Image (cartoon, rainbow, N blue to C red):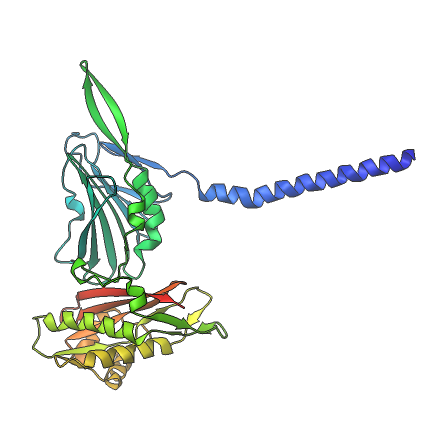
Length: 387
């Protein structure tokens, strides 16, 4: 009996140690990576503020403090390691204007500006979207004026990406801002930090990548429903297809046609070359069937061709021109080659864009390129729900 008791205690001890080691292993593999992902952001100190920014981003101070002498800056850019993404803040002591992020009319287009009233607050938020004429990037500015104070936050990203991809970081960026004022108290200057408590939820309620470019053309209730639902088949060998509703294509066509026909750079009848759109699958391991862009291109060209003021270049002409340019028609036409393509087929405008599957939705981006100057004349997008 004495031996059996010792054997039993030994087994219990071994089992207890195994459990302990298992718990430690789980902590090392799960908890520590989470802690690493949520590690604190570094802090930048400006003339009248401090703010957190994403790790590994480069700090680029911009506007000198208007009321601080040489003590710091009123605005600063935070640039990602690959230089494709930028966050921006302008936070002076009092009022002022962020001239370093003003629209450059030579290289940029003002896409839209709209004002959103914050719930329970007097100060509205002005949201401005800007895109590069060459289509390389786009910018979003959030302007908050409250009495004598003025704050501006911004993000810049590649044109093909969604602002929504950076909303989490942008909200954290805004929330981390602490502004400073100086208060005269019995002859002693006291520095006091003021936490910004703007409603972070305000951005979540605003469509940052709206299917509408200007407030004057807002669709009636729920545009996703009115434009139809995207159908999708099951992937086969990593390739799958989606069906874009014809109603959505017709709506996109009407928007593009209204802008093209209103343009005064060319004659009454405008010649447009429509190329296949770039395809972006929902995951890197999958591919969208190339037939998707061909179908969209054909439906879009047909819908636009119904306008008496627009002549659509035949697909065969475009294919021949792209072959001469040694470019395959699979979404690889960029702005520089669009200009060459337009010259070969005698087009006034070249229409290109992308079809992006984002899981629960599909976003179609379209850009009209002036074939003579190579500049982006107009850009728009629609967002469709998936079945």
